[in-house]
Image (cartoon, rainbow, N blue to C red; front, side, top):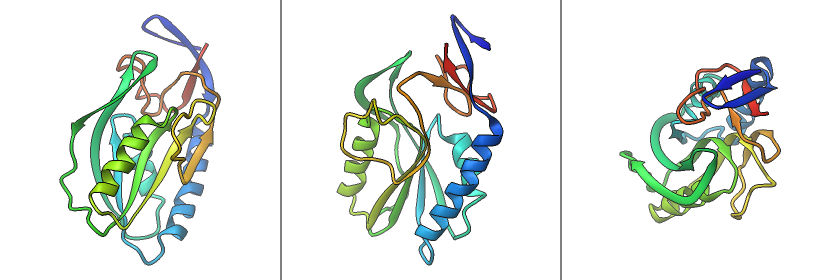
Length: 175
């Protein structure tokens, strides 16, 4: 068990399980984008660790960029997405793979999918480390999923609670 600020978290997904699943995702993505050169769009802040580990397992040419959007306050989503740091690359006619740390309600994902469609992308797929199908309210589902998890708050491996806990090698669940 660990304590972050005023909350207690218990171990949930080990570093070994995360690393093993990311290697499998890299293989799946490599097959999906064989002979393509997708632009991987990493959604900050939470996906930075997932992105760094995932791109090293992909066996095809990729370009990587980062954007930052937010829809969380404390332990729950606000339902509104605010774009914070925008995209600099031209995405017209390109294959896009959005890299997310977690997809729960789908609000951020819907916002990003619509934004990329409006920019004339060739294709858009989504890879996420974690997916909460029971929390999903929007239609767009991720194409590549590391782990499906219940609708509980998690922290670690890039995910935070009030800005803390991102550095943890494992994922912990709220006790």
